Image (cartoon, rainbow, N blue to C red; front, side, top):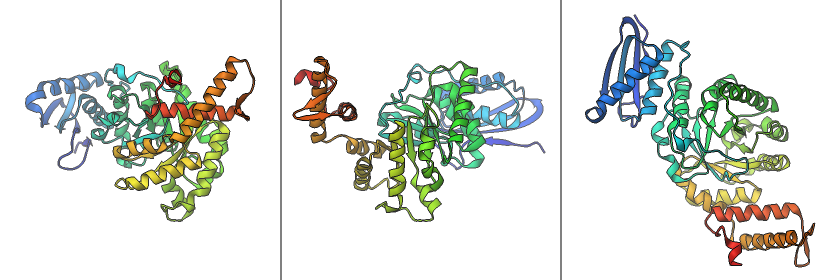
Length: 403
């Protein structure tokens, strides 16, 4: 009996996705398409399916498409994944055209207050996620994707990077651990990903392995833009190696902490009070600052508790964190509002920046505010506060003209 290769969502009524079933046979290729939008788009779905098969060199077998309203890049990914399950040595990639809105760049010091996790195997959640204006969108290949689906999800994430409008959000992907994660990189580095999240990091060697693989792929595909890295520390060993990890690569831009795995590693429950993680979070912030990186706090898992989220953000801010993870779009706005500087902080920062400008105009090497000398780190912090106030719509970009 011929093997049958199936990819796509389980369940009776998935949304914005497609199930593809391919059976290798010696008989000429037969294609059967069932689609909820067949009346409107049946011909284009048939043409797309035929095109993918032709590019992959498939002329035989039985292909069944069960479409639940998938957009073209999802359908292309699912068909390619099903066929390559049967014929893994096919070298050809079937890529959607890279959209213009996918080709912007990122910077190492941009704001990363919020990063929204999106399961890589659920395209319905990613299609319009950018409209919620997170600082970063994470297409996840790791914990949110079960082992049987990891291979096929790579094709979805690759195509999403070429097709989805992130509305200016940083384009992030969380890869898997070890060799599986290095293989993930082959699917994403050539397609304008900005930042890679590396999970469960416990040594500098893990960062170096990712860095070397990215350099190899970038050279092969002609990529010249950097790929930034955000190691996630999720164990006692990882926390104790925080500075070593932070300094492992010039492409590191942030350190993040994952408290679900960290507390499990310690064998203690995670609490809202957070005493069990105070040491770890302090270590991470200090290591990040020592290496010149941003410090990113863990996710807040109670989606319905906005008051608790705001309190968690204020605590993280007080500890020195620059951002947090999000697991639902509704967390983004309160998170941004809570990370925003207060009016007192803004007023102080304005005074420091104006004093700095005056010192620059006079050619002075020191900055004075009243009778106090202001150190360069304080000036830098004030400038960051001003930039954050502008980003939070609490201060006009041309505020100096109004002084």
